Length: 331
Ligand code: UT7
Image (cartoon, rainbow, N blue to C red; front, side, top):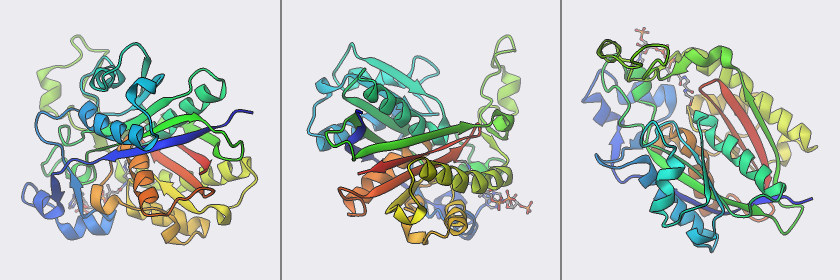
C-alpha cells in the first residue's frame, strides 16, 4: 500500500510582536488575566497591506526548500484559512501566481482550527490513491484585521495571532513511515457558539450598515462552552486514533496539539495521563493562529530536535464548527 508522508515543513511569523501590555493600552484587559486564562504572552500581527497569501507564500517557500523542491514540482495546493484575502476566489488561487506557477489545482478548506488537519487528510488520500505526488498544504491566518480591539471584543481579540505554516505531502518510500491514520469529526449543533456572522446570505443585500453597526464584522464566541467541549473531544479523538493503529499514549513521542489555550492542552494531557512536556506548546509566543498552528508547531519541534526519523507524533485539533480531529504520523 502507498503511504504518504510529510516531505518538507516551513513556517512564517510576521515580525511585529504585540504583547499583552500592548493590548491593555487599547482596551480593558491585563497581562495577568490573559496569561492566567490562556497562557499567551505575545502574538504576531501582520502589517497593513499584507495578505494572508503573503504569509502563506513565505511558509510555502521554506517548506519547498526543506523538501529540496521548487514550486514547479508541485502538482496540487490545499489552502486552509478562515481569514482569506477576499471572500472569493479561494486563497490557493491567490497563492499560486505568487509561487510563480499556474495550471495545477488549488483548493481551499474552511475548517478553522481543524483546517490544517482536514487538509492534511485530503492530501494524504490524494497521494494514497495515486492522484498527486507533491501536494502543498498550507495553513495561514491574518486575524489582526478582523478582531475588535475594544472592551466588547476583548474575550476573542486577546487570543488570536497571525502566522503561516506549510508542509509538502508526497509518497513515502518506506511503508512503515508516514501518515498512519486520520480521524475527522464535526458537530454542527455548535455552529453558532463560535462564528463570524460577517454577512447573512438570507438577507438582501447580505450585508447592511445595521449589521456592521451591531458588530457582525467581529467573531463571537461562547468561550466557556468551547472550552468545555474541547477538553472532552480532544482526549476522545486521541484515544480513537491510537486505537485505530493499535498504539498507546505511551508510544507517542510528541503530541502536537492546536494552540487555542494552554489550559485546554494541560487539561487534555492530564486527562490522558501524559506528561505536559509531551504536549508541544508555543501559544505563549504566537497566540492562536488557527489553521497555521499545527504546521508552525511541527516546524519548530523539528528544529528543536523533538521530532526525529522514527518518532511517533500526533496532531490533534479542535475548533469552530465544532470540528475536531487527529492524525498519527511515524516520522
Ligand atoms: O481555537 C478554538 C477557539 N477558542 C477556544 O478554544 C477558546 C476556549 N475558551 C477559552 O479559552 C476561555 O473561555 C477564554 C480564555 C476565552 C475566557 O476565559 P474564561 O475563564 O472562560 O472567562 P469568561 O469568559 O468566563 O470571563 C470571565 C471574566 C468576565 O468578567 P465577569 O463577568 O466575571 O466580571 C469577562 O468579562 O473575565 C472577563 N474578561 C476579560 N477580562 C480581562 C473576558 N475577556 C477578558 C479579557 N481581559 N480579555
